[in-house]
Length: 315
Picture 1 (cartoon, one colour):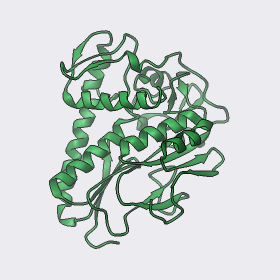
Picture 2 (picture 1 turned 30 degrees about the horizontal axis):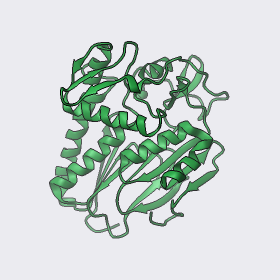
Picture 3 (picture 1 turned 30 degrees about the vertical axis):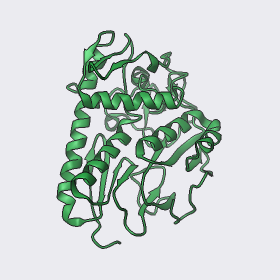
């Protein structure tokens, strides 16, 4: 391990947080910065907190309401994701997620008996993509969503939080920093000499020797979207959290896991989530964007796109 490297890990935003710093003397300060960032984002963007600003916005559907700058930024990120993906990553799927049973923190949901269900999740909602109907005015700090629409920022907020946190730590300490939120990874500042070593796998909670691939990156972000981790039982079926906006139901699995590297974690996450939704069309789409990617099929077969490295190599 590189001299001076320090680590801390804890739970926040309903997932695991890992902080890695190139200077151990700044670890306490860096952790305090990340904790503050995540707390502010949770208060603004959580769909499961009664006191969050997002909950207030969803309750006021059909009316124009004033919103704070942090939520404006989060919604701008989500709307940009929708625009870049032609609506495949859509923040207006909150009602569809609730109808699929994702109406409370994932840790409180009933776990499935096995990793995959015997049958694909049926379409359980008729909610259609509505991101273009979201009216956001940054200058006036106002937002209006249509009646019947509920925003969910889960597809982008975690990666955005990782990027904000890594930048804030680097700005305050000058250190090289890696922040991982549930396996979505953002880096800022100088990396250790061999690069930041990352084990890419289906489940970010897995041990370092779990099936997957170890690579290293010098900068940027890596995000992994998967239908294998956040799964639960609802109405006798196994559901997952990635919604296909064209049907309003959970995506029918083609790829169990997609990992993408990009200039930051947000862009990596947008591409990874859209790839899950696009299914068999994803490899060609990712190649056209020149984004290095690793796609794992339902049967476990691995397909790499672009300059994604071999085991142990640097990206």
